Image 1 (tube, one colour):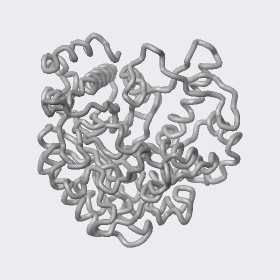
Image 2 (cartoon, one colour):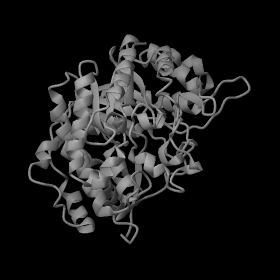
Image 3 (cartoon, helix red, strand yellow):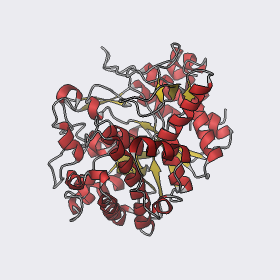
Length: 470
């Protein structure tokens, strides 16, 4: 059978600096907001931190060998903002750029395309003197950092992601306070989110003459569906879509914020006077590609606003028949197809690169020394099929980067959730490719032709083909 994927489709995997590097006090790195947040009692499940993580700052050569052995065509990683600009605003740490230059060159020698994320949440802690993303000075600070990285690596990196998941930073870091920097203030969160988007636009302009690579942003998008056929729930789903999706997509692509959500924010968070004349023009139209982080959907029900609910909606549990990850997240590959088609239909068409997609599945090595993560294999196959369906409908989909290459430090959840294709034994730092890693390597070799690798997983593949996650 012929693969539905183009010959140059970018199959790969992803990580981030803070979740993998460790070496927090090595080679001139400055503290990040996550370093400070992790010291708060109870902030990190299990009381851990990222001081070692997967030790990838030191073991990067081993990681590159793994990437090559799996046949990955692309690899997404992030440069650590606080390693490159330790004080947030001033001197560039040339040693940090030397490190990332060696890493990029090693990937290229393996024939792997680097996908570089600039902000994967590790803002220098020094910028908190102006409230982090609350201060408009954060925009210029980010552009200063982005310029330094692009000056060094712009001739070699073909894919650049300025901001990773701005909604998560806004929601968890500034609205709820359960991620760094740990602020919990609704009006402040809206301000922070705007400055993150503005920083994308300013950094894009600063980088544009420094690289021929594509520059985009990487929002996490969650299709919002009503919990019932009622009009109230339908409106709840539309409202939620404005909150998590359109509030970011519209300014990035259309240069405007959606009217319904803008009115809502003004009701619950006050005047949006931090949005200055010219800001939206600076944000909009600066997307050479869309980096899409997709994990699940939101099932929405109408609800009365209250002290702990600023919105007239709430997320409800997935239907009882739903398949869930070990973290309780609903697995809905079909929602990926629908989302990709929607993006093609409603927004200016640019290449779409799936920059994150994965699940928590906490299998450990068995008596034979292998990690038999059949659920991750099923998950992979179901999402490959979902992408094939989107391609058949004309979506300009150019690649898929699985989250994550390695088990790693999962932010406030510590080391309990395991997302990796590769198992990491944290005390010894031993890496064990899971069964899913071998299966993914076979899928890559077949360029996503599911029929060509069905027999390698036997019953698991047959179960998946019958629609286990459909």
